[in-house]
Image 1 (cartoon, rainbow, N blue to C red):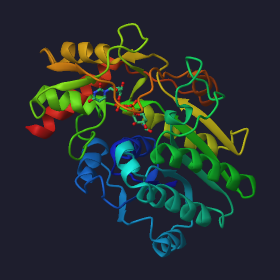
Image 2: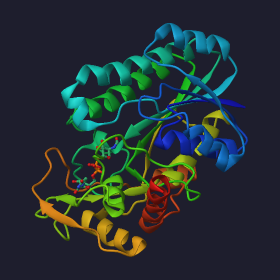
Image 3: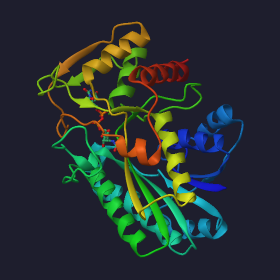
Image 4: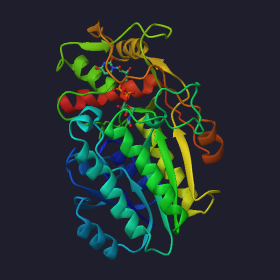
Amino acid sequence: MKVLVTGGLGFIGSHTVVELQNEGFEVVIIDNLSNSSEKVLDGIVAVTGKKPLFEKMDLREKAAVQDFFARHSDLAGVIHFAASKAVNESVENPLLYYENNINTLVYILQELQKMESANFIFSSSCTVYGEADVMPITESAPVKPALSPYGNTKQIGEEIITETCKVSRINSILLRYFNPIGAHPSAHIGELPIGVPQNLVPFITQTGIGIREQLSVYGDDYPTTDGTCIRDYIHVVDLAKAHVVALQRLINKKNVDKVETFNLGTGTGSSVLEVITTFEKVSGKPLPYQIVGRREGDIITAYANTDKANNVLGWKAKSTLEDGLTSAWKWEQKIRS
Ligand code: WQD
């Protein structure tokens, strides 16, 4: 069975391609290489021994999208990762985010709507919950006003899909990721942040390897156990596997609603200081850091209630924070060697 993975050379996309191939799917990747590299294909081949089909394409070009689907009318499903994801950049250039994340989604759905049936998996985010009132966060927690154009594209994306599925033969699963970290344990694929990383774990591994002088911890005066913010860090391989399970659910017509939503997290919250301590343990050396002021827009605490994914999807995160940091550190050391 053939599956389209948009953004399949990116961080979560490449790990999902590996898991799809491991399960016997034939994969076609579309990627515009805006935040990835064709070399990732070699990493995928090193893990699975199989080269996925790859088409370098920009999904903002509607004619190219139409042409692709005309040539691939036999898709068992589409997993749509291709999107921009930097919160700060989205504040500076909102239209870029609406064009990259919304136009492309519309063009793909327009083509899927023409098909006999279509299965569509969407990368959403825990960012839709904002500062949730109850922990752990369930899927029925209210969607809060987005704090950035990036966050807004995820909310609008979910709405566009829901409205379209209602009036078409498209079935969809929306996956709300908590904080993806780590790399493939083989260290053949991993995260490749461009410039100074905004996210905690790549900043930590770059500090560990000496590219950054020290980590700035954004605030230690939050109402949490140690004063630093709490997140649910999920290993990217666990996350990737959830996409395969979700796709199989749609292919086997096991979904009970045309659109289903699942949180993808571990269910455990970890503070920034806990992440630092765990990294120090796996790397065997102290991490230089300083406490600085709070970062604007940071929410205090977010971790998932994963009951729905566990019970309905039959998926559970297996890796620990330590596993995630060990693999991220192994990857960082490999790419700098
Ligand atoms: C984690 C914690 C920071 C960097 C991101 C996306 C969001 C959503 C989830 C996708 C926070 C602290 C960080 C640093 C630090 N993803 N930190 N020093 O903020 O949860 O959000 O992932 O949709 O949209 O933005 O992740 O990794 O940036 O931060 O102290 O240099 O680490 O304050 O508490 P976040 P993060």
